[in-house]
Amino acid sequence: MTAVRLYSPGSEDDDNDGNDEYEPNDVPSTAASITEGTYSDLQILNGERDFYAVTLDEGASLETSISFDHATGDLDLGLFGPNGQLLDSSISVTDDEYVSYS
Image (cartoon, rainbow, N blue to C red; front, side, top):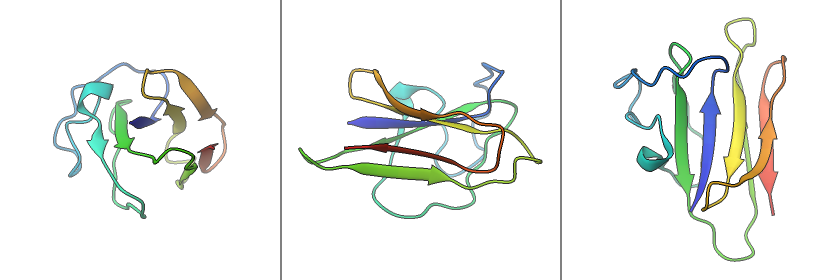
């Protein structure tokens, strides 16, 4: 399983249960399992971190992105392998972030 981490930098606050349908998913062990698709109305509150888990077939690739207005808040995106190793990250001060793995 591969984990995708979406977070607002600068805070370790994980006490935001209930802010969207995938909570609690603020640590890797509670990552929300998702499938291919588009997900909207997700929320990051008070600097929390959200984790989503995807299962890839051997040889499969993954591309994921988040779209947001940076003026409303700075979000970053990380992609982690099954052992917690960082595979890719997108950390910027602009709108939107993108990561991929193949």
